[in-house]
Image (cartoon, rainbow, N blue to C red; front, side):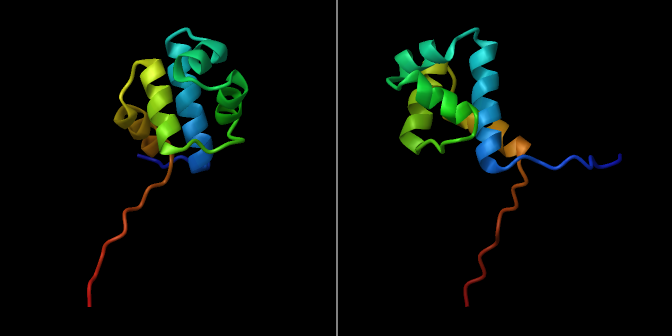
Length: 91
């Protein structure tokens, strides 16, 4: 199977894309998500445009507002990025 030559998005862009996809799949506006999660809609917009990095707390609050588990969102992010776990070799 040939590999895609298209570059994979940055972590920040992958988070933005996953958040937007989840919000749109639930037919919610940025205003609705912001209200439900306790954030200004401008912040939600900045996250979806990859102009801000959310804190873990913000991700949890936004996932709750979207009715999804944070692990589900992070799985989508992981699938969009190049993730290479490092091994630990104690001396």
